[in-house]
Every structure is written in structure tokens, then in C-alpha cells.
Length: 167
Image 1 (cartoon, rainbow, N blue to C red):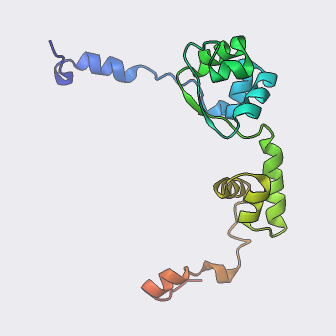
Image 2: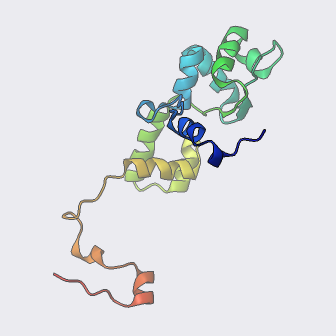
Image 3: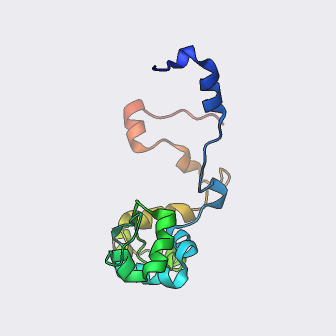
């Protein structure tokens, strides 16, 4: 017999009140490298990154001795990784020293190096460079903003005309 939700309000209420399981709460956000290192150890994580960094890798639910992951990090580590990531395709990070790369991106941009040159020299994507720069950009306070920057962008001025500002 098909259960229609409108006929069973008690069932709907019980399902909506049940808390959803979240394995990675927002307060404990960690990188994928940290999650892999926690599940299989830092040495095996470094080996996995050296072998498959920058590639998407399928983690089997039940690793066998001939699988790519097993050949790279060994059967015990592959089984431990399967407990956490089994059945998923992971984009294995390129390096484990991302904090050092972020600092170099910010420093190079402060020296007026182009986004394309930064991405090329640090072997990452331009999108990643923009993302890091956005994270490190200091929020501008209204008092620090000059008076000339309060006008609308050129496209808005062409569309609407000049904006009248009150003082």
C-alpha cells in the first residue's frame, strides 16, 4: 500500500524532526589532504599525492591487491582509506604544502606579477590564484575609501546617468 504523506502527518513530522547526519561539520572544516592524512597517515598520504596528485582517483569499496590505490600505498592503508572514502572519486591534491603556495601567491601579486605568470610559475590554475587572492583581500572600510570611488561604475553611469549623492 502506498503511503501518501498527507494521510500520515505523524510520519512526516517524525522525518522532518530527525537531525541529518553531517560527517564534516562547518566548524571543523579541513582540507582533503588533512582528511586523507588522518585516515591513512601522513607518509602514505604523501606517497598517494606523489603518485596521483592532480588526478581524479576512484577509491574502491573493497580494495584488491591489484588496484591502483593498493599498489601505491599498500593494502592496509588502502583498506583504511576505503572505510572513509570507499566508492568515491577523489581529486587528489597536487601538493601537501598549500599554505606555503598561498603565501607565495600573495607575495608575488604584491610585487605586481600577473595572474597568468603566478599560475604558470607555481603550477596551479588561474582560478586558484584568484580564489587565494580573494581570501586574503582585506575588507575595505568606508572611512578608508576615497570620495571619488563612491560613484557608480561606468556601465551604470551610461545606463542611468550620473548618480546624485547627498552629503
